[in-house]
Amino acid sequence: MYHIKTLNSISEVGLERFDPANYMICGDEYCLEGILVRSAKMHDYEFPESLLAIARAGAGVNNIPLERCSEAGIAVFNTPGANANAVKELVLCALLMSSRDIAGGIRWVREQAATGIEVSEVVEKWKSAFIGPELYHKSLGIIGLGAIGALVANMAIKLGMDVYGYDPFLSVDSALRLDRHIHVMKDVQELYRKSDYITIHTLYTPDTARMINAEAFAAMKQGVRLINLARGEIVDDDAVLAALDTGKVAAYVTDFPNNRLLEAPHVIGMPHLGASTPESEQNCAVMAADQVREYLETGNITNSVNYPAVNMDPSGVMRLCIIHKNVPAMLANITALLSRDHVNVENLSNKSRGDYAYTLVDLGTKVGEDVIEDVRNLENVIRVRAIEW
Image 1 (cartoon, helix red, strand yellow):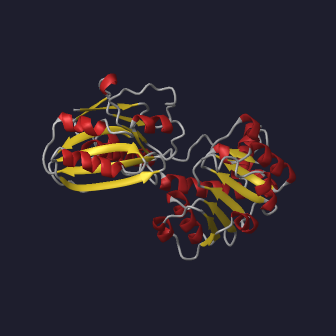
Image 2: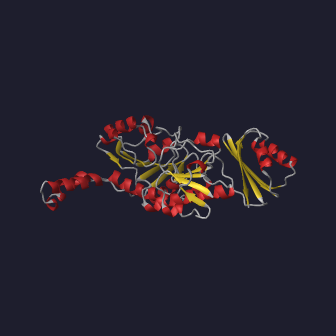
Image 3: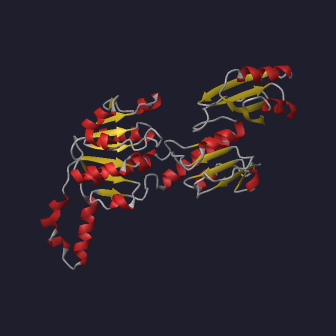
């Protein structure tokens, strides 16, 4: 029986992926094997020794102490692409709100009605105060062409926009999803110079922190409209407020508002609505649950943010799942030890990621705890567990 804890409200559609015959949701705190989380902060969370996996029902994992998890042999998963359509649709909304003062117009209409004025008699006279350009034939720059960025790019092409994308880590899969009319730029500065609108869809990392800064704004068109549904810290608040003051930025739509930003008249703040749809929450929960279940039951890793992806079809009668440091001779040491114990290796798969590596070893015979303990005691091994078929 596996025990799974939820630290936030997780869609029942996702939790239903755990067979009650094999899983207990919110079971014993001290023998947890898996945790599903959304936004709960885990940096001070005390991990039980039994914990094998944490799945974030969403893309960002800044609320999870990744290095501490890696050192403890805990695989951390996220759900890239599960909320992509929800964010894409909100980008369309943000493009329109940044272009035409829809929010200001709605607010003005309500204010007029509140004073007792007959709104229908004044709207024609004052509607020009909320005028703004169409999206058609304008240029859109997209920073980050992953699951969300690719959907946004293809949507913008269908809207008749000229689309420029920048992603130094563009994967083959993402590239294949892009419409052939999208211009993929090698230099983000060129994207800044060409774009009437810019939308950000990159992960928040030390490299992307405040990447939209004074230097970036200096390279942009006068009157550019900026959309940030990725992470607040990617945009430098001081720089964007200065750019709004000079008119360099005509509007800033952010899903990460703060009081200081909202003092500026051309900031449109939303309360982190990017993935706030029932469909998105269900998709994230299902993906998170399936990844944890696959890892616990087979050892296969998909969409881990701290360990490499390893997927091997089951063979033999027992599988050893070995998390270890990415150092020379580890495979040789593991296979030599098994050979010494007269254990036949049916299949083996090994991948590395940064300082860590993961090895799956399928065995032709079942081994006892003594052999598993021998592997566990090898230098640079972090965690070993056995799965019987």
